[in-house]
Length: 393
Image 1 (tube, rainbow, N blue to C red):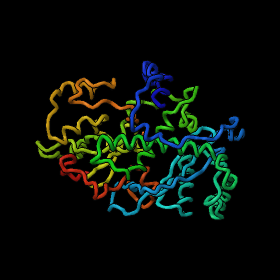
Image 2: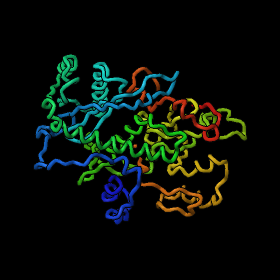
Image 3: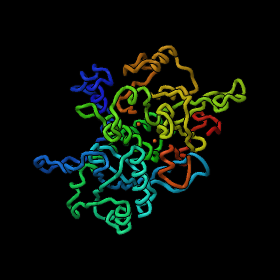
Image 4: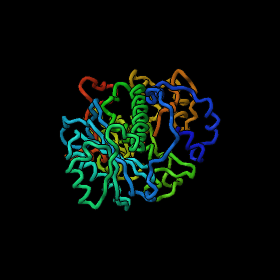
C-alpha cells in the first residue's frame, strides 16, 4: 500500500504504521483489487531481468491494453471530437521499473509507431536512449514496426508464441497494478460525485495511477521508479505530498478576469467557478493543475485553485444550503487530515482511497499530455445547480 510505504520512509507520519495490521476495509478499494484467485502452484521465483540492463533504456518491455469501454479523448481547445480512446500502449523500463502509457484511438500500426515515438521523446527529455525492446508476438512483429526499430539502431526480442506471456511479466504486472489503482480512484470519485464523474474519464484515472506508481512506490533504499529512471534522488524538494490532490475532486478556480489583472467581473458575481481536478500539467510546475470545465468539456491549466479533496462542499451545493457548523467544516478542510469527522452530520470522512497522480491538437497523446478531455455524455448532464452558467475555459 502506498500510504504504508510512504510512512515507512518518513514521508508520512510514522503513526500510520500502527494501522498496518488492522486496516479498515473500504468497498471501492476491494472492487479495484478484485481478480480471479490463482489455482496454480507457484514455481520457484525467477527473474526475467537481463543482467546487462544496468541503466535506464537498456531494456524496455512493451505491451498493449485494449478497453471495450471507450474513454474520452483529451482536448483543451476547438470543437469536441467524436473519437474515443480504446487502447493504451505501455512501456516499462527494465532497470528502474518506470512505466509510460500512450493513449490510442485504435490499434493500427500508425498509432503503435506514434506510441513508440512518444515514449522515445519522453525518454530523450531525460537524456535516455532506448536501446532494446521486448514485446509479445502480433502487432509488434509487423515488418513496419521492425523496420522502425532497425532504423533507430535498436533491437527487439519476442516472447514465445501463446504460452510465453510470462516472459513479458514485468509489464504485465505493471499494467495490472495501475489498472486496479485507476479503477479505485475513479470509482471513489464517482461514488462521491456521481453527477459529474463518468466512467469514460478512465484515461485520466489511468494516467493518474501511472503517476502514483512512478512517484510514490519506493524500494528499500527509498528510491522510486521515477528517481531511478531520471537518476534523481528523492527528497522533499521533488516529492511534496501537499501538492497531490484527490482525483476527480471539486475545485474552485479564480475567475480568469481577476487572474489576468484586467477589469474583473461584476463585483457581486461568483469569483470561483466550479471545476473538476483531473491531472497535473506536464508543461508547468507541479503546483499547476489541469481542471475540467463541465460546461464546455475543455481542460485548462490553473494555478489559483482551491481544492475540496474530500468532496465536503458538494452536499451543500446540491441542497443550496450553508453548513450548520461552518467553523468545524473549515477546520477540517484546513487541517492536515486526521481522517475523523468533527460532526458526522455535516462532514464526510476522509477515505484512504483518495489517492494523489499529465492544448488541443490532432495527436491524441499530445492532447492528453496537456491534460485535455472532452465533455460528459448527454445521458449524464451535470445539474446547473452544481456547475453554474459560466463559460470560462
